[in-house]
Image 1 (tube, rainbow, N blue to C red):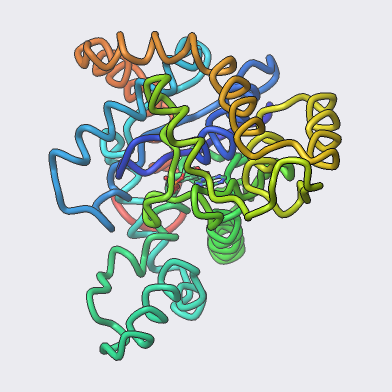
Image 2: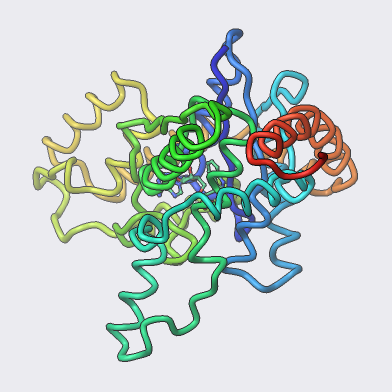
Length: 332
Ligand code: TYM
């Protein structure tokens, strides 16, 4: 069987980028009968960039409600909270001792933080925690713990999956063939969804379109997508347009061809955005209602997560025993 695994960091409200980059492909994949799927809330990862307990808790509720509202079948898929699986943190330490420091030096998130400090004339390490530095190791533990082969992610996470693969290979080579080597799965159509300002849609850029905004707000946000100054009637370049990029992430092949033609014929930005709103709203409208109902009922969400943790630990506990035995730690 194919094992699929992916997680989302609990530091904000799920946005269209999370949806098309990770959640939608993951839910589709989980419907395939010869696959087993593991989806989780990465709340230990949240601690790397957020030290506000209430924000983390709220985000965990929102992300969980999102998966459920979008139709994740939790009888089939294992859906859990990272921090409920203590084996992951132990494995993370073991892998920390296998991961080359030089490899971590190359991690994008860490490098970006250093570059920003340098640019601002600060000490290069200013404000950088060991958590940020070791982020890819914890992520490797998430993936390797469950022997996942396939990791559906957005383009920004490919490097981390490759690092997990690297660390696994190193462990297997040195000790024993314990880990499966994982591979990232990226949907090329939506490799990096752009945000309101045309940069990558990201919580850290504050340019996101939250997935389940009330209809009116969704319309407002879509209207805020940055466009150039071309007038109605001027031909427009779809490949240089966030409006078209988001369209493509939601449209069928046929509808993408249609919108390309509209761009060539000079559709007005206002009209393109109106049609984009309708397209997105049609896809997520029903799920939004389920989302709002679920959010009002955190106990139900909690029950689902507890069940998921139980299922997950049936795999993680024996797996950790295997690791311990391979490295000579634990019972004599
Ligand atoms: P996170 O929380 O930043 O993002 C969750 C998922 O959404 C994808 N994504 C995007 N995809 C397309 N376009 C965008 N603009 C966009 N923004 C975000 C991300 O690529 C990701 O797939 N470290 C991870 C969470 C994590 C994880 C894991 C993922 C922890 N352990 C193990 C997979 C396997 C993160 O911070 O993702």
